[in-house]
Length: 457
Image (cartoon, rainbow, N blue to C red):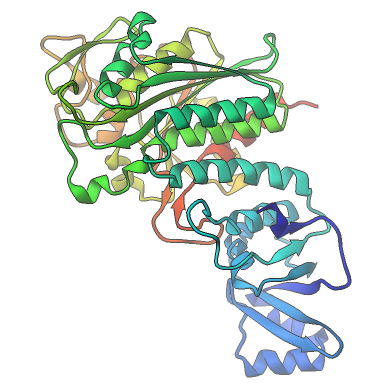
């Protein structure tokens, strides 16, 4: 959908004026008489997202887009679909509209998932004089990658297909991709990934992508890749299983971040580790009360097979940590508790590193990619105690579930600076720049943080 952003100005393009609600009266003073009269007749108040077309004799009509009172370029992203289709040129906008943010917002709002049916109409295309369209398209392509993967049902995105998507990504940027599949997981010491995925007809696997110069700073990146989650033997109720095609959203978001890093040629050594499984049900499914061995060497008591994500992540985080990265990041659609705490729009994250948190918060504000720090509260750590194993994989209390899940993962990270995202990866109701369906939550913020740290050119 890169065609939604134009590279060159053309006389046939319709002039677009973005007008803030507080600026409308001033704008009307210099507007053509016909425009001023039509604004009054249509009761156009420049509320956010409202559109008004003003005919001009022998010329393309003027397009007016209300920006409301909130200074947020990403709040204008749905204009790509609310404006009539055609080509537009930005003529004027409030001073707070950053051209680069608007370009990305426009592309994000223009997204449609078209694998199974064509889109109803093309987006409006916009030329923005001061925007770097190459950068905007690179970022949008990474966001689209995450969205397309999350939107694809498990009937078409099984574990084989998910691995294939990683290989396509690796090929695009010349990265090295490898996989450990099926019973080889046991031979190469990934027992918990194998246990969670062994019941499925689609073999579990650990997929690794390595990119960048070996002497560059090492970044570990892990993403939960559960292509579908029935809940296992602790089967989910139907209303909770309906969206479980999105349970590989952590892996999709990790791939989006990897895409941004590689497209920008960030001077880092990237090591992405994705545990990819189908949490299915069969006679060979793992069970509540099973004791699993982990790659870390810790024995883990299984309490509920619907808490499978933290098990596969534990082996993957251990693997990523073996490369001694200076920073380890993971994305996972891990707990419903995180949604109860923060709802669907914010990405909760956990870290003990104050500098990392500060940098991430600033980057999130710059990119309008909202995140919120949650506490790794040591007081809850004892809730993971097991009487017969080194650790139980769920807590003895139902409260603070996102926190205790993060505390479980921390046991497998060690002293490496680490940030864990417990994301939703889904937009239940469309909002500007975020059409309903799969989404990227956090990768743009993390990329901006990494870019500020490592891209000194």
